[in-house]
Amino acid sequence: MEITEAMRKRKSIRGYKSDPVSKDMLREILVTAGRAPSAMNIQPWEFTVIAGDILDKIKSAIIGKLNSGAPAQPDHLVVGWPQDSIYRQRQVGLAKQIFSIMDIKREDKEKRAEWFERGFRFFDAPAAIIITTDSILAESSPLIDIGAVMQSICLAALDHGLGTCIEDQGVLYPEVLRELAGISETRRIMIAIAIGYPDPDFPANRLESTREPVDSITQWIGF
Image (cartoon, rainbow, N blue to C red; front, side, top):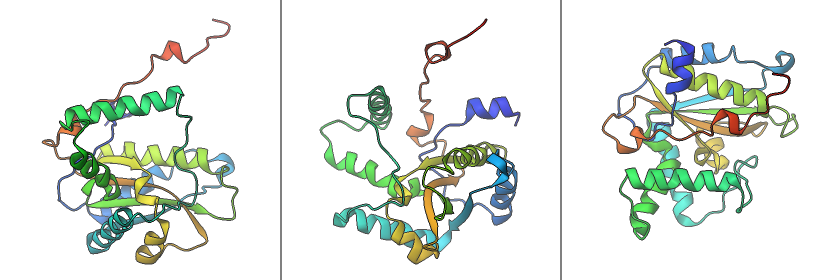
C-alpha cells in the first residue's frame, strides 16, 4: 500500500476475526517499523508480542483486576487532560460516535460496561504488541521516538491486511504483563497495540474519527 494511502486509511480497529496472525508476518512488520525515526539512533523501544493461550490468560487476569476494583498502576501516565479542555471535548465526541454506531444508549449501564471491558481484552484481537522502554531513561525522553515506531507498526500492518488499535487499557495493570509475559522490572511498559484481521461486520470498525481542519491548527509564516 502506498504510504499516503496508508496514512489516510489507518484507523482504530475495535473488532477482530479470530484468525491467528503468523509470527513471520508480525516479525516482518516490526522489522519495517524499526526503521522509524529515532533521535541520535538511540532506538529506545523493545517489543513483547503476545498471542495464543498466554494472551488469553493475560486478558482474563486484567479483566479480573478490573472487575475486582483493583487500582490501575501503570508505569507512566497514559492519559491526562483537563476536564474543561478541547482535548476532553474531542474524547467525549469520539465516545458519542462509538456509542451511537454500537447502539449503546447512555442509560444502558450494562452495555456501556461491556464496551469498557473490551479495551482491557485488547478488543479481542488474536495478538498484541507491548512496547516497552528502558527504565533508566527519563520518563519523557523516549516518548517521541516511541510515538514514531508506534505509528510505523500501524502503517506497516495495513500492508499485510491487518488492523490495529493503539490502547492504554492493556498496560494499566503492568503487574499482569510482568507475571504472565515475563516483562522485566527494568523495562517501563509504555503502550499496547491490538493487532489482527479486522472483522468487517463489527459496527465500530466503520467509524472514521474526525480531524481538525489543517488551517485551524497551523500558522503559516512567510507565505
